[in-house]
Length: 233
Image (cartoon, rainbow, N blue to C red):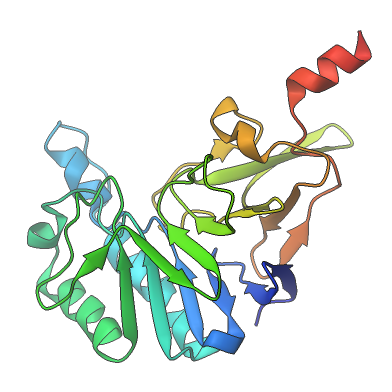
């Protein structure tokens, strides 16, 4: 069970160490960037990775669903690594995913990698709106409304006594919440990167994923590094 929660846009959310976000009052589990069949996509370019990422990611998802028992599931884009991933999936993995979606009311927000593909019998959307919150794959910096998104695979870097720790993380600003990648074969973007400049600020909060817990990072970790340099000069 998650040991960390946060309030966002007037609602309470549980932060799970898997990278899932649980909206308990809405019985909605939110996951982004599973990137199923990423390993098999690399095979076409001659880069051979162990072909277990899809099964491991789905097993992780099944475990979280069993633990939290949500009624609904929201995929926040890039469920598949590319538009043809479904056809490369092993029959057993396709059945596992189908079993999950057949037993949960499922919302498919489309991502850039999966190229608007959703499995047969389902339909996708570019934006889902609920409880005054917009759910989309890629953050829209021009929209002032509260938004939960994915896409960037954010990671936080903490230095302590000469040791650097880099962990996937949730990033929360006043009207933005970005979830970490859920897939087992996904990288991470340093939350201080310019691509996440809209989230940089003194009040931004980072929640780093541990093996069994979620940890709040020290305040100010996601401040704009350019501002720190100017201030120190």
